[in-house]
Length: 421
Image (cartoon, rainbow, N blue to C red; front, side, top):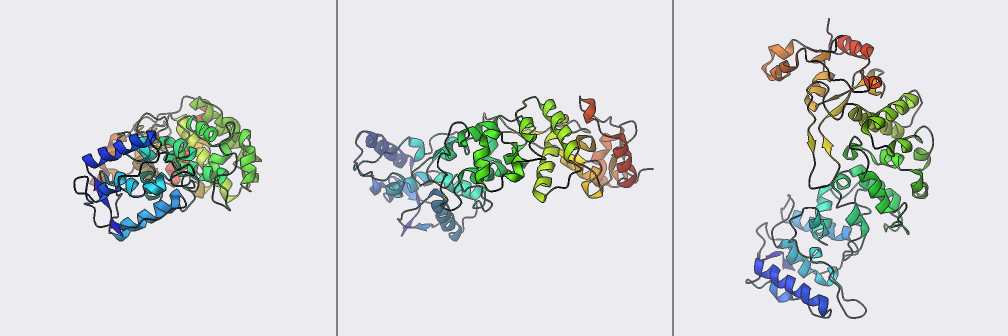
């Protein structure tokens, strides 16, 4: 047993020097003496974490192992102390950089072992830190989020780690990760399927397709089923291999593939609205209803340019230089689905979360002249005074007349939800 330590600046430099020498002389032994030398390493301030030398069959096995060790040591937040992952990489160097049959080691780029790069995404290239952080982010990937990403052997930084993990829009989408696992992971062996790197319809093509969808396709909120329904016919062989292709390739969702090829946000909203209108009356499975709900959100956000119809706010979050955003605005039903409302843009409004909640509870409504009306409790309860700023506010409507809110639906909401006179 050995307690986890952290390499000092001097220790990291010594490790880096060894990696540089190793590229020229592949048979050099790692400088394991610095692991416990106080000149090169210090105790981990997070706590005492005992670990042992051992092999790991996959990135998943290591992530599970090291996470359990941290938890048993009472470390419940992300363990990411400076110098710790470099120390762990050196401690497990025989596993992350094994000796080949020719008697040499091939360490690859420094980023696989060192965390010098300040770019948060590139730090996911570290062979040990990356699986652990992904394990923490998705709580072990119980729904399949990590089946593909963590299926490789520990020394392998495969195409899944590169193309899924280093795209913010995709790594923030559980649905995109689950769909990738369903498409490209062998359910029996747990390994990537043969040919999953194919240029035309393999993982790279999958990631490129999703990353290039218009922003109104909020991948972070979309289910794996919806994402699979969006995929064009070039992915048919992988969809067929999931055993559930009939849910995605047949009516009523076959036209969804055409919509995903559009890049103009308003065109997407119009086409989705037409498709929603066509399928709303059909009897659908639970899975198909979820897909339709995702389509409704995409169409409403697209029609309103992801801005609140009442406040005009359109909060958006992104990191780094990647495309793809998270929008705070939500798609609200005017007539709730539970009361017979349909997933149509004209039965929807794009609303900020707080305003959406107030709208659903009848604290505000839209009058016949498309102005905001407020309930008495907005004035009588000081907690609700924030809503007073929207009294008589003119509703912001979409540019395309087809997407304007249905007047009858608004009147129904005012009478039956807000109980306005």
